[in-house]
Image (cartoon, rainbow over all chains, first blue to last red; front, side):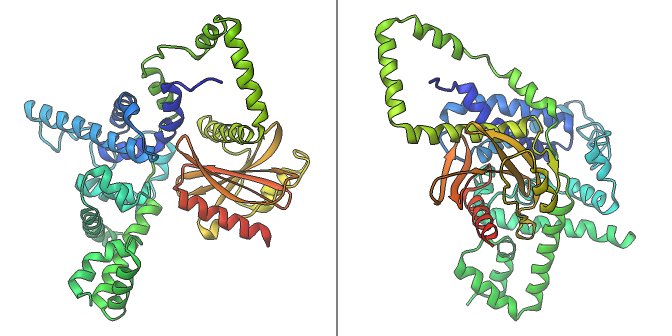
Length: 182
Length: 251
């Protein structure tokens, strides 16, 4: 009988959560290209620390690393942007322009997204500050519990609740004028 | 008694069913008589539902798994070469191995189960990796069930659990425990669930939950069929799924 190697264990335990990792990274970076880089970097880090992981929630563990990797990357981006003195709005980090349209490729998902109501939501979400967007994506799309989110973000459960509450109110407020136009 | 402000602050958690029973009851009591809170509660639920329904879920592109795997550091010791070096150790060790092997045969039952657990998890992972979840894609149990006709020597019970939040998405032929089996595919939000069914001549057995390589598995035997289900869902949700399958199959 052959004992699985670290790499094999990693591949069966952590690699299957790739969609969750990529989804979160897309919502954080607002760009597929950057999300791929962040996810790959996160996986390499996860592999390095895999020996120290003994829990059974490998998805939450991986998402914590994805999130941390993102913030490191994000700070780098911010620093570079300040150094090159680019205007914030001109240089939306993906370089693709208008928030929410950063995924303008020929992906079927993107085409599906063209439905008006969905496009409005997408844009509103991208306009939402990061701290709200991340908890909402974890809750509504990844269906993580408050406890899991609290552990991933490193905040108390009560703060998870108030961020979700405020995030939803903000989102509703951003969406309200759009609805009147339509 | 919980006052208005406290209730207002707890409404997000109430909408997400994250409150304890006592708190939830108190919120409900206040909510019944407060129009402001009712509006706020409705607003929370509407935004949450719209997010779930309309926000894009970005699935990883197929090349990303490959890209990551090849970026991982190479293994220092290959499994194959390790076996080879064992063999070169000679007779004494071979005898020892033979003893272990015969012990393994002797303790036949648990090792069978373990092997099957490995097989089920491997099958589940494979079905996700190669994007080959379903051979017949349909949410209609009356399409999926006849699809197995002529492909299997038994007719698996196929139930739809969409109203309970576990929509059927399709079926697939698979191979487990040395025989072809029916694999039914369900989904809970973004989480695929594989349900394997094949005939058994064992007695009915109650569901047993186990955790293997980060997946949850539940197996049971009922009315001449073995059932194994596997998913990355939380244990309580998979348990819920099993309860629904069991009660629906019995009807």
